[in-house]
Image (tube, rainbow, N blue to C red; front, side, top):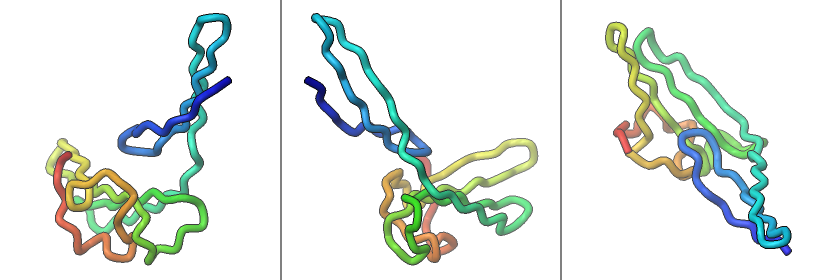
Length: 101
């Protein structure tokens, strides 16, 4: 018999984990969910990255959005409103406050 649970894998996608018990030994099987991704190169120093389930409309509040900020040779990725969940709207990406987790 197997059990399934979802675990977070930041920053890209959640995984379904199936734990199989075979004669006392545990074997884990990982299967990554396929996600659509969008990239908006807003400027030389700002890029937005969005991830959602395939077919998700850009106005649906079910996107994970990150912003890449470049300063000289240093890049930083920050989450929309400091939230790593799939709870933001791609269309509103420029209006969020971007923070570290």
